[in-house]
Length: 119
Image 1 (cartoon, helix red, strand yellow):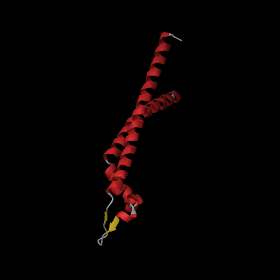
Image 2 (cartoon, one colour):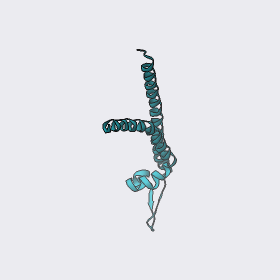
Image 3 (cartoon, rainbow, N blue to C red):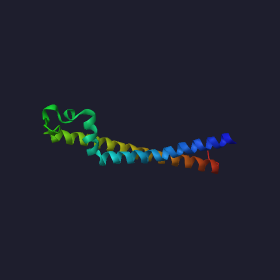
Image 4 (cartoon, one colour):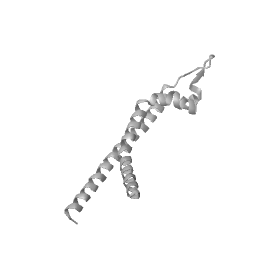
């Protein structure tokens, strides 16, 4: 009896993961798109350095330890690249959602065929 209950829980858990995964991916992708500016500055800036993002020739260091950069096109390129990754995540979530609905429809049709006795 315990084994049967465990099996039912595992199947239900797998089904729940399949239903939630696309929505989580869409939500994360939306977050990446919305917050792409803050992911690049200061997020990636700390990881890879401002010189890598805008080019070493375009960074002017100030006496107080700050900096000014003179290449806003590079900043826009990096921000757009991060936003594009978010768009890809959203697209992947939508594709998974469509695939899961097709799988669910196929399973429903299969159950209906089994109930009606069709081959």
